[in-house]
Length: 133
View 1: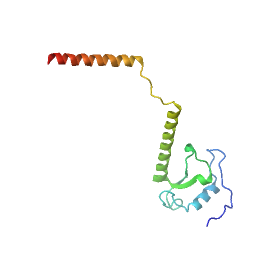
View 2: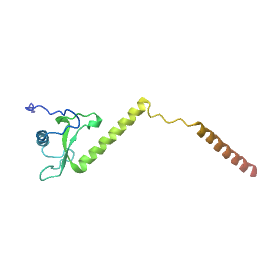
View 3: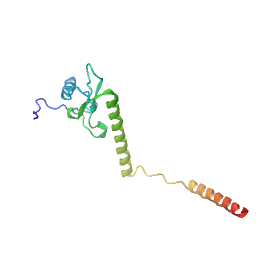
View 4: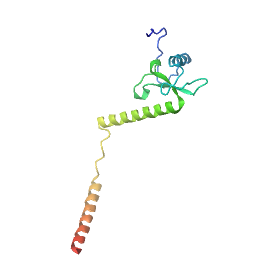
């Protein structure tokens, strides 16, 4: 059975706003003082921890209490951050491709001429070999 919230959920006014101490305490109690990835005890007498956004801000997450979780500093927070960056990179690349900003460069005229000349040299060398045999 779940109970209704007695305290309104904290929502940051902007992404850089520091999370207040009272909110950090509520998150610590809500998560039972354990890393949400590996369940190790964190905080006083345990591993160092970080508050992490479940859905990263860069990937569209919100800066609010319900989107924050406890993670141990190493290895869980580091791994989660690497995953978030990979998702952001993939999303960015897909967006670039869809808007046409990532089209491959057309070969320049000089490169076409260079390829033609190289092909002509190769064909000439093959012709000489055939004459010798």
